[in-house]
Image (cartoon, rainbow, N blue to C red; front, side):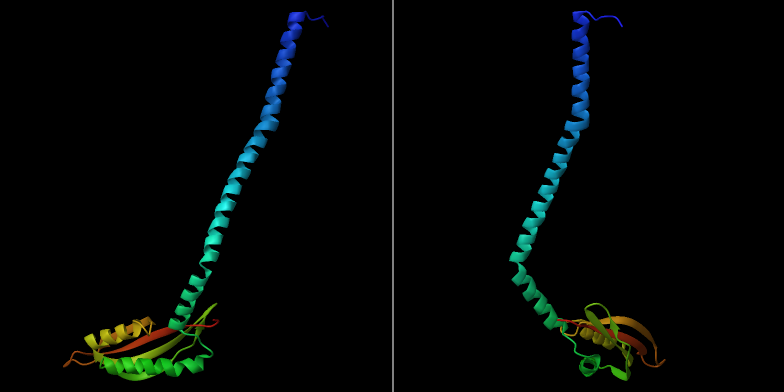
Length: 177
């Protein structure tokens, strides 16, 4: 191999130095800098979550009081048998108030989910259209909050505007308060 002149040695060392700086920057410094940016972003996200969690903990009493109000409104259930007379009496009261004749009341199978139980009742009713609408309105508004699951109406008489129908309604109760 030929001996390099001093000028060529300087060019070789500068080239090797630039290549070394390029390799160190692209394979060591740049990934560390990007990693620190990711860490900073993660720290910002975690601190925002922490602030939000603190705010929620400060509002714990308010949330619990709203939950208790909702639990009182919906009602708790010890057993399905204990609630069914209450449901039937409320349905009878709404039927009397809206001039609806209930031909049959049939309790249905209870549907239980995680924290709520749905007690359903099937009704066979006779009445006028406006009376039936008033009856459904009374069942669905406060303080009853019944859900209308099924509604099937047909004309009962050719001479009068009387309707006969089948209605399935349900009421939600909290299982675990």
